[in-house]
Amino acid sequence: MTKAAKTAPKKKGVAKTASPASFSFDSTALVKKLLATAPERAREVLVRRFGLGTSSTRETLEAIGDRSGITRERVRQIEAAGLDAIRSSKAFDESKKAFEEIAEYVHSLGAVIPEDELFELLGKDEKARNRFRFLLMLDSAFFRERETNDFIARWHVDREMAKSIHDALSRLYSSLPDDDVVPEGEMLDRFLEELKGINDAYKNEEVLKRWLSISKHIGSNPLTEWGKASAPAIRIKGIRDYAYLAIKRHGQPMHFADVSKAIGSLFVKKAHIATTHNELIKDPRFVLVGRGLYALTEWGYKPGVVRDVIRETLEQNGPLKKEEIIKQVKEARFVKDNTILVNLNDSRYFKRTKDGRYTAV
Image 1 (tube, one colour):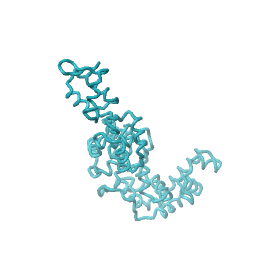
Image 2: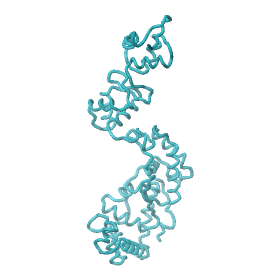
Image 3: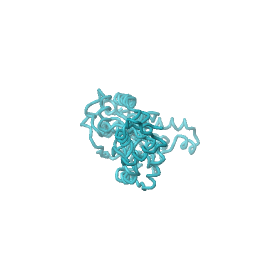
Image 4: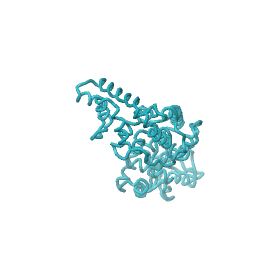
């Protein structure tokens, strides 16, 4: 066991922006040196399992077994024996500084990091990433958590911290509204509240967002709003969803042509005006409140022509004077006063009482 496996490296402060790894050792030479200590048959299995040869393809136990005429379990045994042989070798003991460097780097990323992101940072190509995958499997300082229903695959160098982060993510998810989203700053503050006891060295935006990305149930949208991954504003699938975000960000009704332009400027997505208009018409999240103007249903707007809005207003409030009707209808529709009056004076639907109020027929 290396020194890195026995004690965690001293933290020099967590980097706010992740930079590709840079080490004092040559990973190619190190892997070659370590592989040389394994028995020949085990070495061949390890090379194929981790993609350490001329091909970067990592083979499954079944594939290696089929080609070699042995069972999957036998391949697993040979692989395990090869790894054990390397761990007990002098070469492995002599390589402790290299493993300490890797552990220090993982600590600088937040000690717990999504698997894909980690290897993207460790190696510039697939062969380099395979070498580091092999190295991390050798040293007990590094632990891989498999993908679950709640979390993506990730690596860590601190079991206790990993558990604290997993628990904090679960609590955070439970506290989030089902359909609404929160600004990124508020989300990070809420996450920090759940992370009591975590070393302050890790409490920066870059690390917090990296930890948030571990959860399958929490996500963000292109406007850096956060919420449950199932929320409509997070689960972006097409023009309708981008239109929803554009109008919500605008904060008031928008013409469909302006919505199309906003999608292009905010999200760098091509959205033809006619296509955007067609999508808005079909989605119940949007309400036509004027000539080409669309608002969000969640703002309290309801579908229907001006006559329907007048009728609903009278049903909710009882007989009203003309001025009161105009005021309330204009809160729900972007129309001219005259349009409201034309509808109000249609005796088929409304009548004027002796005291100057109007009721629905």
